[in-house]
Amino acid sequence: MGIIGEMYCGVWEGRLPKSEVPVYLLEHQGLYGRDGIYGINNVGFLDNDNRYVFLSRAAMELPKLLNWRPDILHAHDWHTAAVPVFLNTLYRNDPYLEQAASILTIHNMQHQGTFYPGLMEVLGIGWQHFTFLELEQDDLVNLLKGGICHATLLNTVSQGYAREIQTPAYGWGLEEVVEQRAADLYGILNGVDYEEWNPSTDRYLPVTYTIDDLSGKAICKRELQRRFNLPELDVPLFGVVSRMVSQKGTDLLAEAIHEMIKLDLQVVVVGNGEPWAHFFFGGMAHRHPDKVGCFIGYDNALAHLVEAGSDFFLMPSAFEPCGLNQMYSLAYGTPPIVRATGGLDDSIENFNEETLTGDGFKFWSHTASALFNTVGWATWTFYNNLAGLAALRRNGMAKRFTWQEAARQYEQLYADALVLKRG
Image (tube, rainbow, N blue to C red):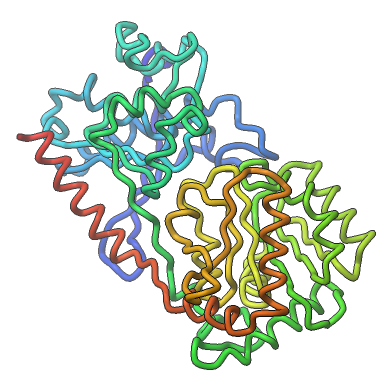
């Protein structure tokens, strides 16, 4: 660990469920024996730099103990972005790793792992790499930037987000760095675990239902209304399951909900995040108990019920690298209302009233008025276009985003990376 010296950890070996694929886990109480993974109450741990450099170095050292020569080192986000950097510096002549290629997957460009310059002494790769061409950004060490510069290939979790992070609006200061590597950047959409998210087998629902028999969805809606003490009325019910942060459009929803509840509809919100949002949506539910329901926290069973019992699902994200809830919503016959960004734009087809194609509702402008107008469109559809609503549900439930397809694309990405590395 550079200037810190040697540090040791325990290593546990397990198996990926339903397979013989080994999984190795590090045990270090001082670094990892904590209540949070990244921090507590949205505040990162002060030693996150050392915690994740340690994880990255351990990943490089472990193959030696296992007498194993990996083909691919696949790092994710800033937390392990030091791995491609190490591979091209300290380990470039290592007999166990010199033939390995590296992949860096960017799940969220906003979080980059920026730390004081002294982290270079912990990395131990030499100050010659602290330049604007590698790890330096605004006189700080930027681990994500280093990973982007050094990885054999890069990918994000949607094609739309791969394009967006090359622009100032979504690149968070690294757009030019990404653009320089555009030829090595790919977008691969995440998949859905349909064993977990399937309305025909979901153990968390009062009744199940299928694309051919949606009668159970109405029962789920009544149960959802009862859970939130909402009147059991046949009005459109809009569901939200989200982190309550600006990235997820929580601020847009807070601004728009005052006008939304003037319509004949109901809204249920499940999530946690920024404290102001807890108080705001909790207050809305208190003042408008016939219109708004709120649960602060995360409850997996309740999240399943919201997906099944809602008529529409709201995702007004400022940016969304992939998103999963819109995919869950499609599977549950709950048309999503999304801002057309990143994976939301890639995975949702806008409703066409004439052809009855599409599976959701999109809006483009990042404003509360755009969100409200789109909610109005969905509300009108609920009351006045029953054929359209049925088509939306049917189209969504017929759609599939499988991990088998994502795995096929990752396998090709690995093959391409090996060709680049080994020639």
